[in-house]
Amino acid sequence: MIILKDEDFIAKGNERACYHHPEDNSKTIKITFENNKRKKSKQSDKEIKYYKELIKRGVKSWKHLPEFFGETKTNKGDGFIIELIRDYDGSVSKSFAYYLKENGSKAYEKELAIYKQYFLDNCIIFNYGMMPKNILLRKNSETDFDLVLIDGLGDVSHFTLPNKIPYFARRRITRRWDKFINKYLK
Ligand SMILES: Nc1ncnc2c1ncn2[C@@H]1O[C@H](COP(=O)(O)OP(=O)(O)OP(=O)(O)O)[C@@H](O)[C@H]1O
Ligand SMILES: [Mg+2]
Image 1 (cartoon, protein in one colour):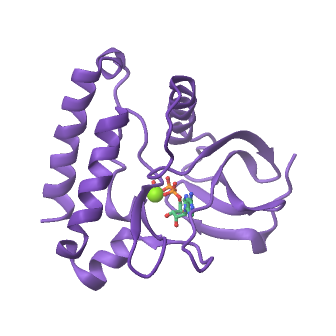
Image 2 (cartoon, rainbow, N blue to C red):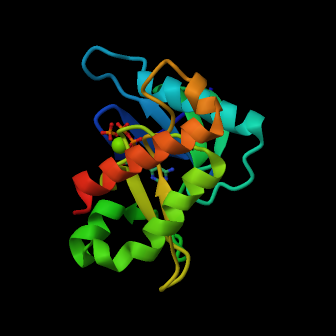
């Protein structure tokens, strides 16, 4: 079991929190905190399941998703280990929501196009968690940025068969992408 200390806390959302991995500063541990009497996160289950599927499928690039390193038990409950997204200067990357507020969406057209293409090329399905607060903007240098989806991987629907057929998967990705753009970036 991994012991997470309060001082290792990084950030939290409505359901889950991230802590620095005590033995590896390139990794973070995501746990579900006790909220709404719910200890187990459906979101995490879905995310872990989808990560395993991607690994089985042999996805080659983790440029736009934190890499997954398996599940673990902690003193704060069940969790899973993922890559901690950091900028070139070592600081934990800030959310896309933060940068949109600073600079507007026009400034990130190139990054958005590359990000969308990654999901299409790799047939990676995202859900309605795809929103600016759930995307980090990783600064690889002062001018080179990647968008990274930290929350919203996998499908809401149980009918996953269409997702296994690339043609249907890409159609679903395109539809969800258009909704994401219309809802958050217009
Ligand atoms: N791989 C990561 N690297 C760096 N920070 C991360 C990473 N994953 C999550 N975080 C931070 O932890 C916060 C909580 O994670 P996450 O969004 O997965 O939780 P959540 O409770 O599911 O969120 P929501 O409220 O959107 O449902 C994020 O907003 C982000 O600040
Ligand atoms: Mg979130």
